[in-house]
Length: 318
Image (cartoon, rainbow, N blue to C red; front, top):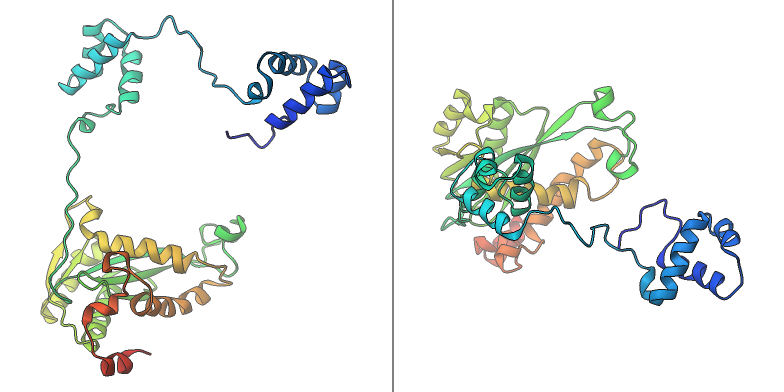
């Protein structure tokens, strides 16, 4: 049961109030003053306690016991059946003999308000490339800069980036499709120059781990559609793949990594400034790659997918 913040009576207080009247300790008027409610409310709970005892002190549904004007079950089934034949709301109302508003309510309860709701859900296609470097996913997350603890901690937006123009910073992320090894950098914008710089740094970082990148997948952001980014991919010997518009699940590994980064890094603690938050990103990314158990990797960290020997692990681990 959800009790609103200004509620004067909880079930226990209702029982206490009712017993104070029933046992003769207080009159209904006195109980109303003590419990800060009207005498009518006191009388209601007293009568309910007499009839039902403690069980009657809980809230009841506001739904009426009888709805004589409600649409009968046959009409509801008919409305749903016609909708599944792709009839419009107005056409259904005319056929069934009810108002369009009634049809709208029935369809909303059935989850068929939109015609596309009739179509079966597209199956979730999960894929994983066969080896590290076969495909890397790129994406960008925009974060507001701040000069004191942010509103997500304090609840106070005064002086935040949306009011005084402190500005934004952009986290360019890269995640390997097979191993989930991730590379992150913060840039001042999401233009092609920054995207290219992040891509080159990521490719070099993977190379130090012995991973040769072959393909890169991005969304359809302007920086990734630019001629400069295309040329950069060609110079690096990468095949560039772009996702289908409005289908973020295609680039789901990057999307999921961003969610994890926001939860475990960006909003995990009260950073005093955005510079302090930015300084912590390489530390968190290292932890993600080398120490954090990954659910899709049998609770092993991403670095385990490289099958490095002990000497290489000690050399690369910093």
